[in-house]
Amino acid sequence: MEDLLLGTYLTNAVVLIIHEIDSAYWREWRLFGLPGGVTLFLVLHFPLLFIVLSGLILVARGEPAGLVFSLILSLGGIAAFLIHSYFWRKGHREFDVPLSKGILGLTLALSVFQLTLTVRLMLG
Image (cartoon, rainbow, N blue to C red; front, side, top):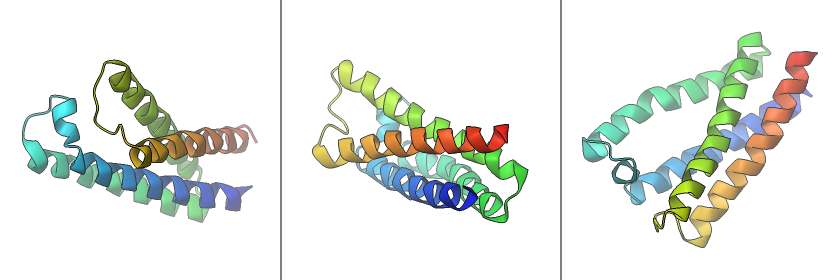
């Protein structure tokens, strides 16, 4: 099951990174009312991507902390989908194209699957 988690973590991380590339296109910082434009947006992504990739290494090594990182990544993916769903219901048209929605839908599916695997491994 550890190999399945590693593959799922890697796939989910790639899909979430693609979503973040899409976020730059849609100028997501405006959606959240963040100051600093693309500069702050990129600066904030350095630690986020560092955490995601560090977690991948820990999962690959079978470290217990890797499960914590996996839990965080999967919950982050679920949150991304829910947050964008909220904005769609509020009438925002950012990410309202088939590919962007597909990326977010895939993020949700992968994150739920990853969360299930992670919890199973945590419980032994």
